[in-house]
Amino acid sequence: MDTEAQQTERDRSSRPSDSEETSDTEGQEGRSRFALVARITEWLPGGRITLSVLFCLLFLLLLNAFVAQPFQIPSGSMENGLRIGDRVLVNKLAYRFGAEPRRGDVVVFDGSGYFGDADYIKRVVGVGGDHVVCCDKKGRIEVNGRSVDESTFLYPGDSPSAVPFDVVVPDGTLFVLGDHRSHSSDSRDHLGSPGGGMIPVGEVIGRADWIVWPTAHWTRLRRSDAYARVPAEDGAHG
Image (cartoon, rainbow, N blue to C red; front, side, top):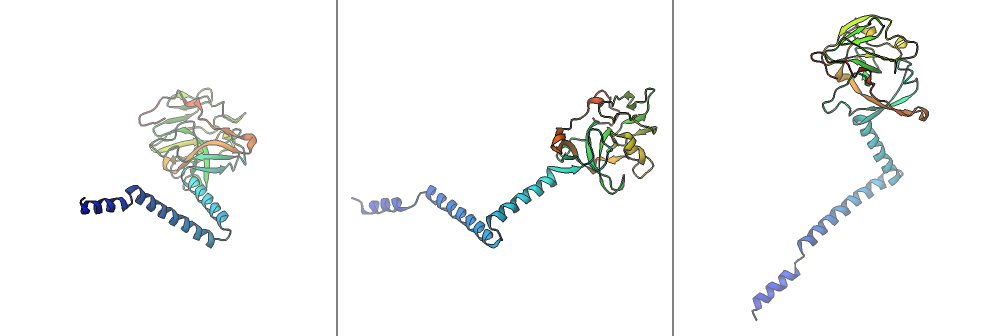
């Protein structure tokens, strides 16, 4: 028998297979990660419990920064739908991927330099290119020549507006009003201010989608269909 051939066969059989090498490498990496976690837990006061809490806090921070943010209703400007002290969940992804606010959306925005140094929550009545007028012969707001019945969300006893106005909304901005018109400082009150009472779309933090607190008020906030039949002016969206 060929002695050299026998030696070659023994050499081949003694080598670990590729799968065994891969498995050993993965095992080493897993042990290294476990050792790292073990060192961190030993260093942290409270050990694994503290580490778990930190991971949860990091997750909540990322969620709040990029996905959803709670917002507490500070005034009665959106009654009766939203009451003082209610907490809504703001969908921060609603307008992140090409979508823009639409008429009837309830939005939270940064009013710094436009309304005041704070975040506000209002309803979108006009988008870029819209012609918004108050009021028609029946006292209703008109958007692009179409009268809008706001009775489903307007505060009982309020008129659509005690202040007449006739505006064209510039592209990239929004005309916003509170549902409790007689107790709302909104686009009507800032027509002579910088920006003309309009809110840049870029200042919108997100769309209010849910009332989450108190639990008795828990409900989903849906876009009003009051504006569904409003035609779009040139350059208008929604």
